[in-house]
Image (cartoon, rainbow, N blue to C red):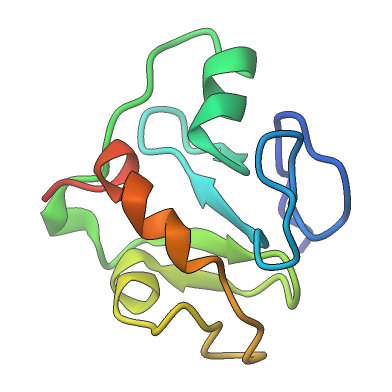
Length: 106
């Protein structure tokens, strides 16, 4: 099954106009709508509602898409990975950690 990623995507690896380095290859399923976007800015620009964060008790949910292998990761698996996809070993941008508060409850 192909996962649809909304927003200002610029390539098949889920990079967007806001974040498009070699390591910007994840998309996040937003708790508020269940839709995947490359980043919070894409959600702000394209969704018709405000974003909400994933509550801790739902961190078992598959909500992170690796743009390289298209595997969906649980939030826990993503947060506990060393910025590397556990399936294909592609590197994720470690700078994404700076935005965790926009996606995940602390």
